Amino acid sequence: MEENDKNEKRFSWKKRKGKEKVEEEEQGSCDPLVVFGSDVMLIILSFLDARSVALSLLVSRDWYGVASSDRLWSTLCEKLWVQKAHIPRISQARGLSKLEAYSLSVMDGKRTRIMKEDLWDHAWEFHYNMVAPEYFRDLDPYWKGTGKLMRRYFHPDGSQTADANDMIWGGHEACYCVVTSFLDCGQIRDHYVRINRWPQLCVRRKEDWSWEMSNHLYSYTSIQDAYKKGGTGPLFPGFRFTA
Image: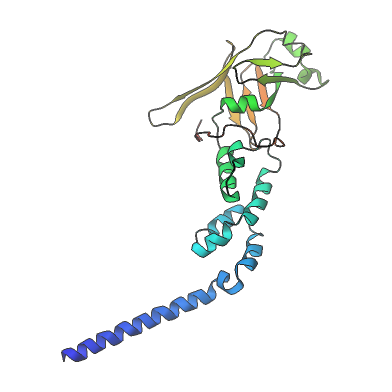
């Protein structure tokens, strides 16, 4: 009797294992990567957007090997960077895969905390706002509609300068600082840029990854410089997205 029970259990176990093996083989035969091969799958994945390709990374180890290819992500990086004002320096670091470069670019594009490197890496267009005194607006090309907008330049030593022919600048000394305070939970409580003793500048990140700083008197906008080799901005931004 005991011998019969053992035989039945052994037969049942073999039957179950055989069924599982058949199911695995059937699954494998339906896997597009198995059916078409990696070269064809690379072509198919090249028609997908970045989010869809990223989801493909999660299918299996074999899928990850194909979907993380630099051939795919080089093109996706180019699509991501086109028409962006600035390319993050962190995405251009040596030794990064194109997948890592893409991910870091997206993360940096969501960064709302401006760093000193962001200030001095870019030239800035400057103009007065409507509430500024009429005397300054009359000298401002932004309001006159003639000539190029005024430009301002931030420097690593904490100073700020303007073009030599700037009618408003007047050659006075200017220094700046970036002020950031945090809540106990680590979220940003307050974040602004201050120049001399002028009212603080609120910081905003735009969709094209450029920066805008403004108060009620005047505004700054970073000038597009995506052509800069090696990118711009901090190499180690310490990502925080909530301003």
